[in-house]
Image (cartoon, rainbow, N blue to C red):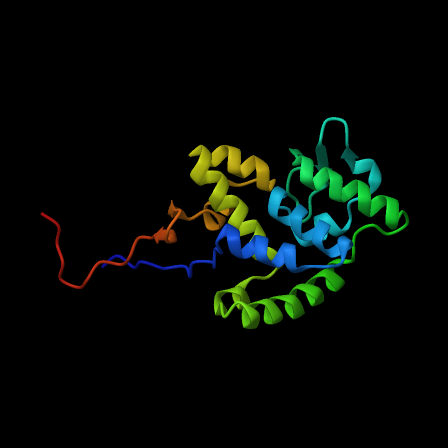
Length: 191
């Protein structure tokens, strides 16, 4: 008998849900950090450690030093994020981004408030690492290139990338549909 181990699927929010949280953040340091998480798929510790020298505002890129033995990587940033970063550095030159712990506490409070105001309990499932799952899934959906997703996330092993990436069907009206293998029914034999 073959044993099939099913991993629990990570929660992948809709982009609109992530944007709702970022847009509801009134603190420029926290909203910049959340947008960095969304656009880069980096771990919160990697983002919180970023310094001015890690950004190239002319090329619109960021160099991320890895945690957990991963690979360093250079990633493109949107014009909107570049603008937010420049404003953040102008207002807070010594500590433009909050610490990882401060960002996590802020996100915990924020998601409760927004989930209640928008009557959307799904928002309660979003945490800092959820942004990484969303980035992996969205990038795979748009490129169909798992090796590119591996590079974006800075993984050394494709096995780790596969844990982050779900096969989804993005749909404008209904959001996304997750596709995952299920264990076969007992006694079921395909033809």
